[in-house]
Image 1 (tube, one colour):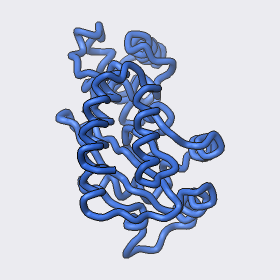
Image 2 (cartoon, one colour):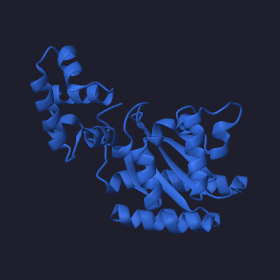
Image 3 (tube, one colour):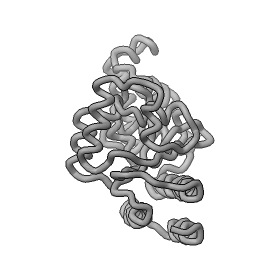
Image 4 (cartoon, helix red, strand yellow):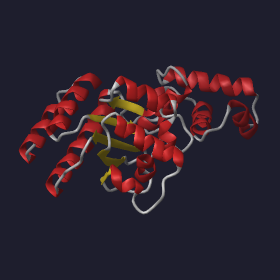
Length: 239
C-alpha cells in the first residue's frame, strides 16, 4: 500500500457510518499489508475484564472466544508493552529482554497457532488520557520504516473514526444526565471496586451503590457495568 493509498483510506473513513463499515475498510487495508487479523480496543487497568473495551475486530470466532473467555488480555505481553510505550512496535518486541511467564507464553503460542505469530501494534492516547490501541496480526511480519509510518497514521484515524461512529465523543457528565454521585460510583467501579467497597468508601448502603451504578449504566446505554465503564472512558468521563 502506497502513502497515497493510505490518504485515500483516511478520506474514505470519514464516510463510514457504522462500525461494520470501518471494519470492512480496515480489513481490506490490513490485507494489503499481509495482516490476517486486527482489532481496535481500549486498554483498561490491569485485572479489568476486556470485553467491554473491544471496539471492533477482525478476529476469527475461535480466537475471539478463546481470548475473552480465558481472560488472555490480562496475560498478554503485547498489552503489557502497550502500557509502557507510546511508540508503535512489533509484537515480538514485547518479549525481548525478558523471560515470559507461563501464562504469557501460552497467549503467544496460542496466537501463533491461529496464524498470529507476530504483529504490529499502535498505542494511542486521547487528550483525556484514555488509552487504546490498534493491533494487527500475521504469520510473518516484514515492514519497512515507511510502511510502519503509514500504518501508524492509518491506525490513529481508524481509532478516532471508530470512537465517533460508536458515539464516543467527549461529553460532560451533565450532558449525559449523570449525577455527581453516579459518576463517582462509576469512577470507583472503573478502579475495580465492588458495590460493597464503594458503599464503604462513600458511606452509603450497598443497595444505594448498586442503584447508582445501574442508573449510570442505563444512561450510558450500556448492558452491564463493564460496558458502562468502557463508555465512560470513551466519552471522556473517566480518566
